[in-house]
Image 1 (spheres, protein in one colour):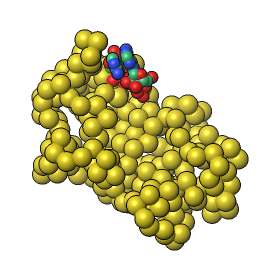
Image 2 (cartoon, rainbow, N blue to C red):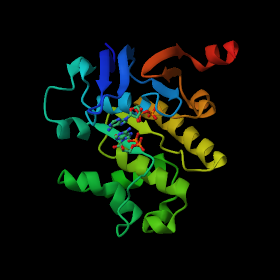
Image 3 (tube, rainbow, N blue to C red):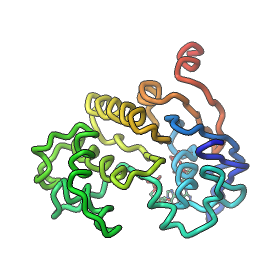
Image 4 (cartoon, rainbow, N blue to C red):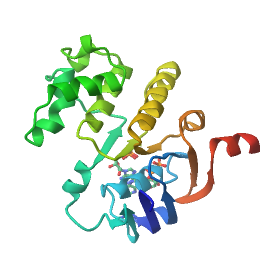
Length: 226
Ligand code: ADP
Ligand code: ADP
């Protein structure tokens, strides 16, 4: 079955803003889906219904057939890697300590796993002892991706993860993410307002407009229609 299923999902915020309007679709295991669209079109809201940072006003979201409303949100969020634009590294912890933090919170410590994660996101081992302030913006986002994946989630959500970076750095990061997703067979959903980024990395592009998914295409089909 699908890794993710949205069934008639809608979100109306408390102030009456209709952010997501009747979205139904499924995401196959191991696919990399990009959610694109103008600012305010509902991408971030739809993404956050997956890890219950946003609770839908109607409809439901299932992961591997299980309704995300069943069970406590913290348990759900531990199973899902989440990367957002403000990566939120702890400034007084080294790169390795930041990446290992989710393991320590779970009462584990695994230095080999941390080293393997740094390697996976193409961060040189020599950076492991540095503080976040001693890294470039792109390197910090790589640390954020490594931290999101260290506990071995099957699902990775990214909300404009590289939006603040220059185009060259973004492209390098997207190539790392695409490779990582293939290596780990990770189901990945990424919000971006950058169609070029979506076309580069995703195997499926969902275009949102006023809370609705108005196009659902492969990059090849989108390019052919452009
Ligand atoms: P996008 O990610 O495409 O920029 P969002 O999902 O962030 O879109 O926002 C969709 C709409 O919902 C926008 O009109 C936004 O202002 C509104 N919105 C987002 N979060 C909230 C909130 N917490 N309360 C009220 N309105 C919100
Ligand atoms: P993001 O979409 O990544 O959460 P935003 O800058 O859109 O970032 O929103 C920052 C915060 O403000 C979020 O918690 C979001 O839910 C909330 N927010 C966004 N738009 C609105 C809005 N129109 N009214 C109230 N809260 C909003």
